[in-house]
Structure formats: C-alpha cells, structure tokens
Image (tube, rainbow, N blue to C red):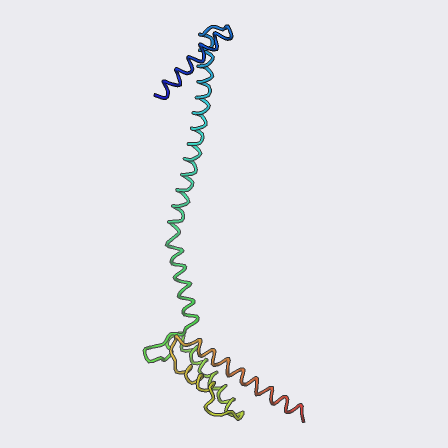
Length: 176
C-alpha cells in the first residue's frame, strides 16, 4: 500500500512539474524513475555492505568464543592447581589427631621448635611462667592445620617480648 502511494505521488509530481516547466511528462517521469532507481541501488549497496560487515563481526565473535571455550578447561585446571599450591603452602596438613603429616611435618615441627625455643628464652629471662604469650604459644603448638596463623601470631608476640627484654637489658647496661 505505501509503495502504491509513493508511486502515485511520483506520477502526480511529474505531471505537475511538466505543466509548470514545459517539459514532457515522459521525460520527467524517466528522470524521476532513474533517480529513484539510483537512490534505491545506493541504499541496497549500503545495506549489503553493512550486512557483510555484521557477518564478518559475527564470525570473529564466534571464533573468539570458540577459543575461549577451548581454553576454559585449562584455565580452570590452572586455577585449581594454584589454589591447591596456596593451600598447601599456607596450612601444613595434619591427621585427625592434629599431628602434622606429609610436607607439613617439617614446617609444623620447625614452628613448634621455634615456639619452644623462644618460650625457653623468655622463661630464662625471668618472666612469669603463665603469661598470655606462653598460653597462646602452647595453644598454637597443639592446634591443627587451620591454626597456623595463630601459631605465627604467637611466635611474633614472643619475638616482640624478647625484643622488649633486649631493650631493657640494653638500657640497664647503658645506665651502668
């Protein structure tokens, strides 16, 4: 229906223009049809080029998606590997009784020895036997893998206590 109206409008325009300009209706009609055809052809070529461009983009996106889908399993396995390495590095494994096992044996035992050596040094320096740091260190030694952070915090507290003792000894020596 709109095409018929457009055609009718074109015919009326040509007829009215020919009567005003003195040209024949056929010449005006031919000119109008030619310009209309050229415009339609240009529009169709533009639409075709846009469709080709969209098709190319769609193929590019499809190939990228395929590449990502192919890489996804390897990325997931890498993430799992990294996650397990981080967990193994930060928490020594223990058995059901809280004893260190596997690679955690060495790390756990070294941590226990360090805590005991520092406790011994603190006790020798004349501190009370049941200070909060001693209790925390004893708790840390007895805890499982999930409490490695507590053990390290206790170790740091004991080290700071030693530093405080060293500062007091240094100030005593300086006063003499």
